[in-house]
Image (cartoon, rainbow, N blue to C red):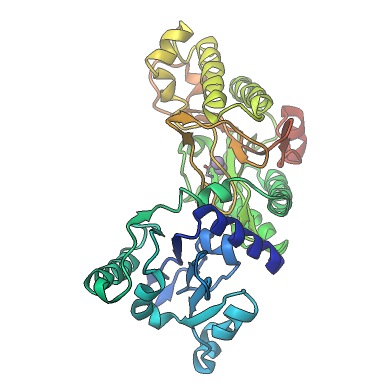
Length: 435
Ligand code: GLY
Ligand code: MN
Ligand code: MN
């Protein structure tokens, strides 16, 4: 976890951004039942992690930059020796103040009765409406009560503003300590992919590789996978969100692994595709070389001023040109881009923001136009080609081949830093790692 001063600086920046007439209410998502009486492991909402580092459920953070006192208020689970025997230690009301910097703290159960008073008389309420319907009702009830009692003093906020407007803009621009944490997540992830390349051979099951990868994530102190790890062999590599990971790898299969370690709550996101038997077939090699050349030339475009759309358009053009050369599509290139038939084999975007969430917060458009990249933003670059086993009008040798190559790229003042450069992707390096 970062030094408390890091979180204090983030809150100061956020409060400066929303101004003295606004109040922000940031709420953890509810714990979820998995089955029977077993819960899904709780993972804190990234907005709360960003502003406090506080990991416990049932937490509400209220920031009131213009208030004379109690600018930072936290509602948390109180200490409870009985329950802590079962569910683990709690920071409690004292910890919220002493460790996490709250000016005032209250039991989570008092949120509904105290919320109106804390948000009253501010112009704007920064709150993520629609994310958690139970919390929406609590907020709506507080506003309704303020309407009823307005003549006695406090009036309700005039507007509800989405956290995307200010908070997610801050999350988009990574500070040095965030980049350092992402480098660590990427280093662990790169090593885990290499472990999978070594272990993955015909006869091994996809879930064995998933286990080896997730083992490395935890062994190195990561939180675990930042999203469900994808290990798809053969035609499973053509299923974009294949997470069953239950088949045996066959001789001649390509294996597509998309897995990223979450470390200190920041996640990496790497995809590599490699031959289980240590040798690309000629058809696999042609497809792989096309995706690799496309991905490397796309990374070269990632610099301040360029946009994610520029990078995607470049990949679409390069892949479409290559698909025509391979006989997957009929030319000319312009027509295939125009009628979007390339989407039969390249159907997803090329990049997304990366950070606390794998698809991280931050607006992709500014003023109706794709926003220019700037130093401190982190994106993935992940072109691929997916030729289904039943694809029509394509040479048979390409059917069932799926290839994606995904790196994590931090934009710097004069270009970029590939955070995942340690993970092999050149054909000879992959063949060596797989042998
Ligand atoms: N692993 C999720 C993605 O690549 O977007
Ligand atoms: Mn990705
Ligand atoms: Mn991925």
